[in-house]
Amino acid sequence: MGFPVIRQRRLRASAELRRLVCQTKVSVDDLVYPLFTCPGKGVKEPIASMAGCFHFSPDRIAEEAAEVASLGIPAVLLFGLPEQKDESGSEAYAEDSTVCRAIRQIKKAVPELLVITDVCLCAYTDHGHCGLIKDGKIDNDPTLELLAKMALAHAQAGADMVAPSDMMDGRIGKMRSVLDAAGFSDTPIMSYAAKYASAYYGPFREAAHSAPEEGDRKSYQMDPGNSREALREMELDLEEGADILMVKPALSYLDIICRVADAFDVPIAAYNVSGEYMMVQAAAEQGLIDRDAVLMETLISIKRAGADIIITYFAKDAARVLRG
Ligand code: PBG
Ligand code: ZN
View 1 (tube, helix red, strand yellow):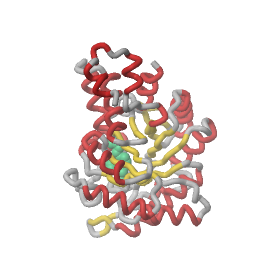
View 2 (cartoon, protein in one colour):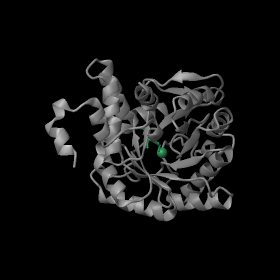
View 3 (cartoon, protein in one colour):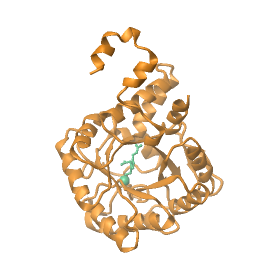
View 4 (tube, protein in one colour):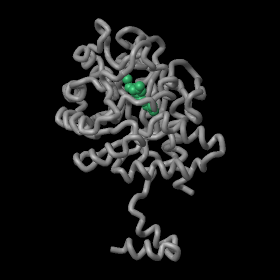
């Protein structure tokens, strides 16, 4: 093998030789850029908790989508905000929801850009939980109907893939059968299969106004101490028909990414979440680190762990760095 030789002669190895033997390269093809759409017209509003990210109303989101596509990024992951929240999150599954309107705008303007949609109720419910609440508890099964309805509305509006992030039990199977029955058997499901109850979602919850009013998400999101449970969750989602499996967050869970990439033969996605993003942004802002170098090193670590797809707020910056 060439590696020991290179190591011994590291000081003399040329840039070309190092390039030749480098095991892990991040490409713009690996990246997904999250986008937030909000009600209203003409809105492009900076998100206070997430430097560099914006809320776009549907009529303005295509400009951003066009920029993302022009950088060579293959996909966006779309999140929406409702006009009004209620107990059952009814705007989430409305056919003319903000997200559905945004999908149509993007697909009209930039048809080649893949539009993936986040499927969950928490931004739409007045209590801020990902599922319906009954007697102070998550009401799993009735929630599945609503999530499937939401996924179908997105597919009908033109979404290329749906990404359920709710962590209810049985949601993938329910969604798959509803999509199939409506003629969307070609619409893949990317499951947030191993989603940990993480404090790294803080900035996002401000952006999506989706923090729970009461309690936390620990009854349905995973305990950070558990790794075998991640394999179990993924196995179940695969059986139910998931096409891509996701680990979220990424950086505190690189070992999980590594394990699931070894265990399953489907594409693995990792979500470099808002808190991970903002730690880098904040440190760079203070002049403590070299932002571009740290963001690229971060993405390489996620890919090296085994992720095929990286969802990151750094996608546009990484694309620019990769272009040189
Ligand atoms: C909604 C959802 C969350 C994120 C993605 N989808 C927040 C949560 O579960 O509380 C987090 C994304 C991020 O932090 O960047 N279920
Ligand atoms: Zn949620």
